[in-house]
Length: 285
Length: 351
Picture (cartoon, helix red, strand yellow):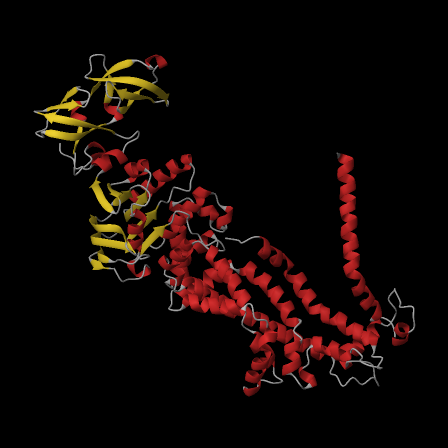
C-alpha cells in the first residue's frame, strides 16, 4: 500500500512538473530573448541561457520604445503601460461599481419591468463586443471620445456577467440580514454601503482580478478608438512591433515589451491571490 | 415600554388568507407568547407588527399611535431573529452599535450603552470578536444585545431559540425571562415550542390557521382550554379526546363507562382527558387494555385502548412502573374536576 502510494505521489508530481515546464518554456524563451542582442537572435541557434543585455534592452524599450536609430514611430513602453493600466483599472472599477449597483437594484427592489430588464441584460451576455463594435464606434465617435481615456474605458464599462454574478451572490444572503438592517434603521444605500459591500468583498476581489486581466488584454477596441501614438495601449504596441514582410523587427525590444506587458496583471494576480482564491471557493456569510 | 393594540388585522398572500380578523392587546411590560403549529400565521403576525410585512386590513397601534404605514425604524421596535441575522463582517461591538450609529448618537453614549448591555448579557469579553468566532448561545446573546441597546418600545422575538441545542435552549429561555423581568420591556415572542410558551409567557396566544384560539395565562390555557384545538395542542403527551354522551351530570363514554361531572350540558360532546390526570385504581370507572409502556424517567406512559371499542388512550402515571401491566386490563380513575368538555360541532369549551 505504502509503495503504491509513493509511486503515485512521484508520478503525479512528475506530471505536474512537466506541465509547469511546458507552460513556462515559451515565457523563458521570451525572457532569454529580452536579454541578448538582435544578432544573437537572428543567428541560429537560439540562445537558451540569458545574456548580459538585460538592463540595456529593458531601459531602451521602457523609455524610448526601442534602440536609437531603430525608428518604430512609437512611444515609450512606459507610456503604453500607463495607458493600458489606466484603461484596465477604469474598466475594472467601472464594471464592479455598475454591476454591484444594478445587482443591488434587481435583488432588493421591486420596480416595474424588473424581470424584463434583468433578462435584457442577461441576453447581452451572449453578445461579445465584436458584434456591436461598429455601432459602438459610431456612438463613441459622435460623442467625440476618440483618442481619449473615456473612449477607451466607457464602452466596456457595463458587464452583464458581473451583474449576474453579484445577483446570484446577493440572493444567497439570508433575507433576515436585510430585515435586521431595516429594523436598525438603515436606508437602502446605508445597507448597500455598510453591509452588502463588506460582505461581498471576496467576490469583488476575485472579479477585480478577472476583469483587470480582461481589460488589460483588450486589443480590438483600443485599436479602433485610438489613432494617435500617445494613446496606444501595450497590447497594440506589441502588435505594431512585430515585423511584417521582409522586415526583421527588433526582437530584444519586442521580447522586453512582452515581458513588461505581463507585469501589471501578474502583480495584480499575486497581490490579490489570497482574496481571489477565497472568493472562488467560499462565500463568507 | 409601550402597549400594543392589534385591531381586526387581516393578511393574505394572493388569494390565500393567512390571518383572519385578528385582535388582541398587549399591555405595557407584558411578555406575550404566540404559539401555534407551523403555518398558523404567527410569524407573519410578528412581522406585521415589526413593519416587515404589509397590513392588508385592520390596524396596529403602538402607544396609541397607528403605525400601519411606518417604517420598522420609526416604530421603535427591536427584533431578534431565528438565525440571529448578525452582520458577519462586524465585530460584536459594531453589531450592537450599528442602529445607534445610524441614529447619529454621540460616540460616548454609544460606548456606554453597549457596555451596559454587554454587562447585562455577560458579553463584556467578546465585544471585539466576529460573529463567526462565537458559539450559538453567544450569538443569540449578541442578537439580544443589539435589541437592548436601542431601548425600544417593544422586543419582537421570532423563534429565537430554535437553532440552539436542547440544553442551551433551556438556559437561554431562563435568561430571556430574567432579562425581560429586569427590563420590563413589552415583548412579543413567537414559538412553536409549547414548553417555551408555558414558561415564558405572562399571557399566551394560541393560534391556528390564522385565527386566535385562546388568549390567557399559561395556567388558564392549560387548565381551561377554550377550544378543542388548544386542548390538544398544549400539553404533552396530548390530551385524549373521546366522544361521549352527557346525561344529567353524568358522562357516558362510547363503551358504556361513566364519569360524574358538574355540567348542565345534555347530549353528545367531545370529552378531553389529560393523560396526567389519570390514576391507577382497580375500582376506577375507566377500564383500559394496556398495549405498550414507555418509561421516560419521571413518568411512565401507558398506551392503551378503551375496553370494548378499542379507542386509543394515553395515560401518564408518575414514577417508574414495572412492565407487568402490558397486555392486561387495568382500571383507572380520573380526577373529575379536571374534565374538559367541548361542543361536538363548534369545538368550543362547554364546561
